[in-house]
Image (cartoon, rainbow over all chains, first blue to last red; front, side, top):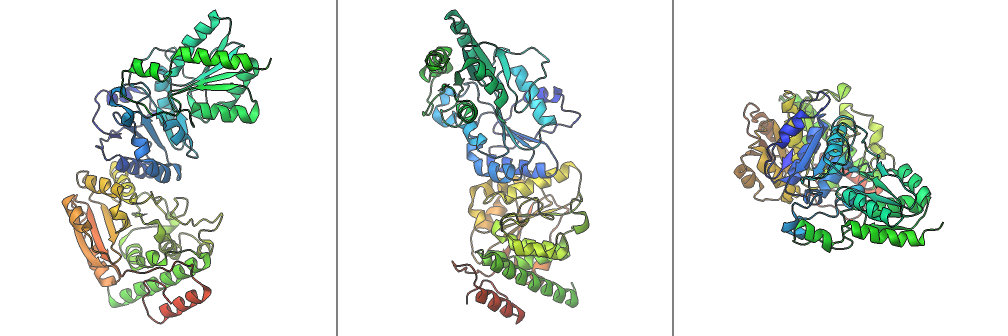
Length: 294
Length: 260
């Protein structure tokens, strides 16, 4: 089901996807987004797997929070909420169209799976996973902009609760999600020149959180930096800190937009302004690396 | 409906009312007028109009009921237990820790087709159920019971405005007006709904309004049910209030609320 303006091409892409033999039906639902969420609950009660997406409205999960919570999360229905704003396509629109609080909102709902793939291929595999295998509600943050491919084509190894170790090292763990994974890889290369070998984890599943992957990594490295396009509260930095604080406390810092709303600007300008860059990751790595206990 | 059946339904409604008073009295919960006002409507629907199968509760072609007004859940539970969906003993643990009967409808309860959905959210879920049934080619109907207060919530109007263009003619919205007189009927008509009204505390009036519903048309239908407004005390029922209410019911008074 889609809310907002229609988007051609998307339906073709999904039709080509391996949906395990299920018939795919598209419903165009206009701008009545709360009604879309409620209808999805009704369709799910009738045994359908429902995907809801809104191409131009990343705020729909905030507007419909009560409906998502009460009609979908509480009864644990098979509904997937897909937001499409991980890139910065809407940056010119300013704070009212920039959604940097979604991980926190969705992660707070009991039973909700929260994912954000870092490239087209992992997005494709995870969408198929959600359609075929996942029981219960899920939120997935996608991007509409072109991204560098990080994974090989036909790499099937993505699922809820998973993460991917992109490079091994013993100096620092960089845990990144979505659009920030590319920045983390750049930061790793800069750090290598400075003699710090970084482990980069694509932590595409915020919930369930890949605890074992992160804990195994920080046991090797002794410090951690988290990078996400999100506010500083309740996102990946929150999830990683909760995991580390309870099991293996090490110095951890977050690269995020911190406690600020967005504003209008180009993608590049905003990335610089809010510090969502590989330089900011490097800067934070140097700080945690300096205070780690070895 | 002949006179004997009419009398039978009124007797069932009386027993359901008594169960509602007992449940809410035992549970010490508030808001009993919200549950009492829809008893006649639910009894007529479940015993005369809807096709439900307590022995096969997930049968695909059963009619669905969505109770938008969660606070009326005790009336729904009393009906469902009397229909045989679950043991009547469950009523006495209503809204307690670990109870099957949650304060607001929960889909784990046998016979409950949809969660409450939040204020004003019942209608959208009902439309979704209607769309799902149509996709499967199942001719079952979906009934959504809301109250006038919920019809002031924006989400209800997002849903109301889409139902006619979606041609969901097998969805019926029942609005318990609870004595208020608003523009809901006019607004629904403007959104393409076919709207009738009835006296929600009179079985014959309820019967004629349901009898007039034309399920062959693709227009979504709404029935505005006038009910008497009840006032609720801010205290849970005392044992005295409860006994008093039960004896009033036995003596033929139709309670809208429990004012001693």
